[in-house]
Length: 228
Ligand code: DC
Image 1 (cartoon, rainbow, N blue to C red):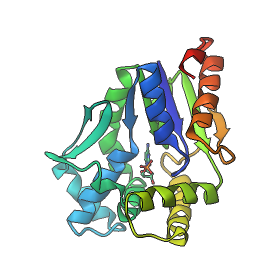
Image 2 (cartoon, rainbow, N blue to C red; image 1 turned 120 degrees about the vertical axis):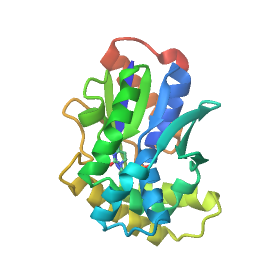
Image 3 (cartoon, helix red, strand yellow; image 1 turned 60 degrees about the vertical axis):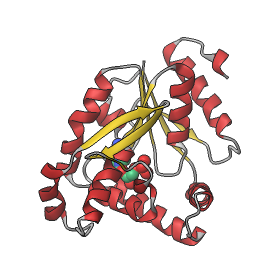
Image 4 (tube, rainbow, N blue to C red; image 1 turned 90 degrees about the vertical axis):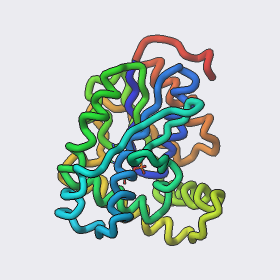
């Protein structure tokens, strides 16, 4: 089974994808982590996020790989586990900027397609249903109002001890939304055959999970109700 989950930042894609992977026995691939790692590599080299030529010139020296520890995806930049280092607000903006560069998308394409081809996978990102796994059995486009998403991201960052304000998180999210969905290449828009799932009013991630299971049942004709 192949499940594609796309949607804007902060909608709860990774939480949903992780839960689906665990309960349905699938491999989870967080593709945003790959763009974030390129962003981190650029930031560490002091390359500005609008320096497209500098970012493209850096790519041959960037070595990214994924590994799994206790079912959790870890992303490596050369030999360093950068799974936590890529989760800062600065790197979120870098990731969004580098992801609009065609050479960067091309650079990550083979790795993602190889992972997708293995099957039994749930991948989340922006272009999974449209570009990476157009043949996915189930495509879900998960979204929520920008205020709800910013509040969730703010709670997540403050829980991790980061010092940010809700207003900063909201402003960054607006910027990322318009960059990610307004770009010419692989914009974050639903595939034609994606099911749209708005979880703005859902208080608990379990509600999003249950809604996704209903969609999966409907699309595959199977019944996965036992995992609820
Ligand atoms: O899902 P995320 O917030 O970790 O993604 C970080 C950035 O990477 C996001 O702003 C857009 C980009 N991205 C992308 O363009 N395509 C993907 N498949 C996944 C992420």
